[in-house]
Length: 166
Image (tube, rainbow, N blue to C red; front, side):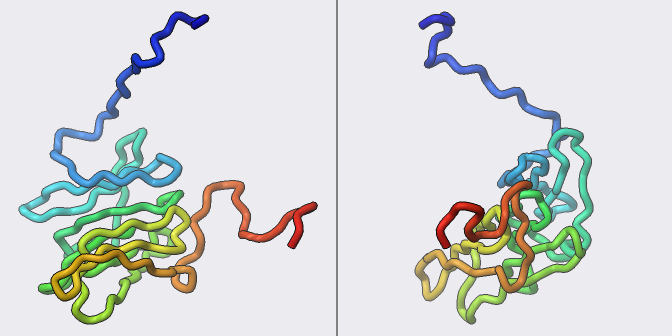
């Protein structure tokens, strides 16, 4: 070992100041710029979206009065925030488009209760754990007809490029 470092010894990651509040269910955007967490506010679980480096809290216009929130998930650049909200006595999966301010509900078949979700980084699909008839299962949903892609910079649409066979 030329550099004299023990390969099993690792340095602890330095935490960033995010405030004194107790937080749960963290979700980072694919680019690592945004952090969504759940916090307790006035007796209700609320999602908090922050710029990770500065700690600036970002507004979520469409999610007020739809608490409690759970299972946050962010797209690559943080354009889309998917999570579960309370709608009366039922939970519902929704996606807030932060670019347009629209809230897109995901309608599940009757009798299916969403428990957790995970949004694909490009925003084109979502996995949802549901309970139906007493059993749990995961369903995948194609969102390509509902949402524009939120891709990492430099990624093209799928397809061949120069010198690639069709």
